Length: 347
Image 1 (cartoon, rainbow, N blue to C red):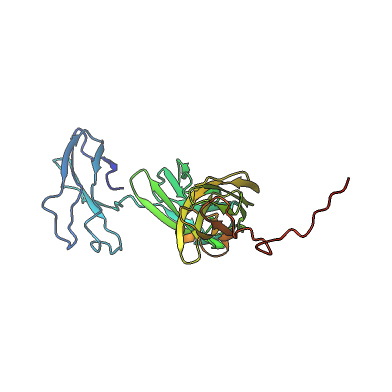
Image 2: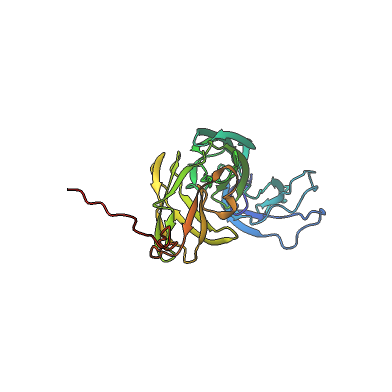
């Protein structure tokens, strides 16, 4: 591998007893065009007879020969070894072809599924099988695409395929006012070796969402005849099967226009429990009024539409000035000038 130290073992002997052996080793003898590499790294070693040489060299790039002297799709190096004893004619040089590969990324032998359909909150086991030609340690990181913590797997050996598995329940948080029946999560898987090589995969997970029911509400007032300066108690309640947070919008309208809008929010509550949001309201101007409560289990105004935005109203509220009672007409006598006809006394 590139950057990995290579050990060369060379043995030679001569028939001339008592001589020394001279070894010359070229670690990159030929260039790609077949010419001798003038810049080849070289070492010279002298030993006794017989001689044994152990030399080390590290290649930091892949080889520079692809067709000479052997045609191949991958680059390689040509190592030349020369030996002589200083007496006899030099022996024919020896050659070694050395293929040096760069460290490669891991690869899938069984990829994770490209897509998956699950129910909200359903636990599902997802697996894939991976290997590495370099037998590097591997670490897999899973991003499930739903905002939950990352998952992880690892192995110390990877020349043979290794299976990684995660069990996960996709339960994305969706605003209840969103009427969608499904939610798409894009899961991302990254496998890395200890040399920084990466392998990626994505998985589209279609999550079927549970049905979210719309809330029900009620509204009433303490009385329907009020003074302009009087604070009128308004009683309002909402019950939501899932206990979602509620948005309350009070619309105050007279015979001609909307006079006021009041918006409140209450947090999530116990499922299927009644939540109260009572207010008091002062009309300030005489007239006939209707108070409408719009209530929704969506906090986002853009989602407060459709079946999840309900309303109830109370009408016939009269706001008028309070005044003292008065006589509509004077007391009249008929005839206007009565006469006394007779007087009767009884004992």
